[in-house]
Length: 505
Image (cartoon, rainbow, N blue to C red; front, side):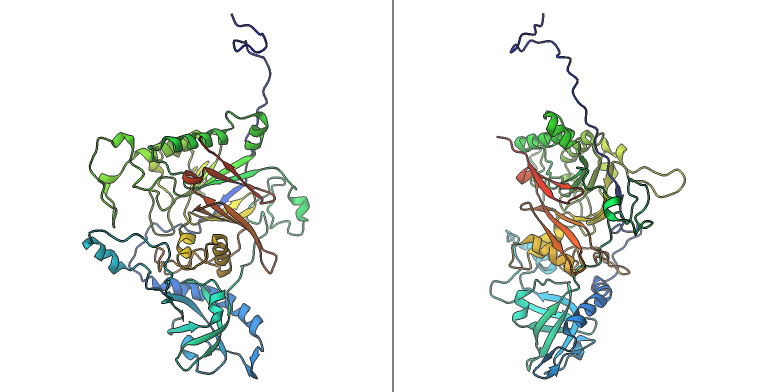
């Protein structure tokens, strides 16, 4: 018989009523900016992307350059606008717009990939393409030709292949263009909050009440949080990492927590998984395949069905199915996930989620567009609107590739530069695999996001940048959960960030 003596473990139920905390709802409007047509092909040339990018961004760079260099003089000579790169004349002070191209001897080459088949041991991948001996050549190109750039101004500006800039200077006797100043497009215009969706408080679109005071339309604080995690790295082999994932699941569900923490967790209205949910092939060997001693061959070009291991995906599907009844999820693919490698990566197919796909897209019965379900598998890059904020996110390949071009270790600075270049993947398709767009260049930012996050980074970091027209952008680098055990929380009103860390000792 149970007794109710104080301090005795054998006690009857207390009869206390424990509070229940309902999950906070969220306003969510995904965009199809990076979705590819079903009838896609690769017969077109990749060079068209650069010309499209130059055409779209040239007016913005031209406006910035004209405002900065209007009536600019050096030694009684006034700077003149030159329309094409090949129209630059020796000794004339001028400025011209074009696309940056950096010739780097250490950049990967398709011929080198072919030669690797004949090597006994392939060299390790390079962390940086930057030449330590200064052999890199910076050039400016347009549809007419290329012009080599030199000068101290290049050292003060972050430049990579594919960004559109205006350069001012003069051509010397060697045919090189000595750069005096450089201008980039700058941050694009930023939409107001709730511009694309209706505010849940009044059910009216922000476009209808543009004159309404923002303080009255949007509450000062509602405590809602957006959770972002990346690099979950499901493999089924690392016991300690499995415990970290179990702790993450219990945290997001509010299990095994005190009432105060449970109430805080209930304010998490959406989880965004920013790529690399599956461990790399080297680490994704399951205990279920221990008896198979055949060494998996290195993946080259194409798919090797004999090397596929379904166990990591099965564990990931179970993880999603556990969370989805309580928490809506936006899932971006990453480099290690079962999706196409070239950007923009398309959503992971629903066939990979036999348990959780029932929470996926809701088809419409009246022929209208389907509504996103609680499991929204999206593209990488991806953009949408969460709680009225315009959000742009990637799995990390764009920043990782830009990192190889520059000496800097500041990844937030690279993200800021992408916003000012108005391009979220400038090195595509040169060194970052990409679909060869011919009619549109989706990597160009037509509007400025409020939140820009990048997954699978070495560490968490964040900053708020401000543009000349009052644009405010929250930059976030999301670390790999498999390495750091960290998840990022973003306040849906103030855009302030915090980190929750899970460790097993």
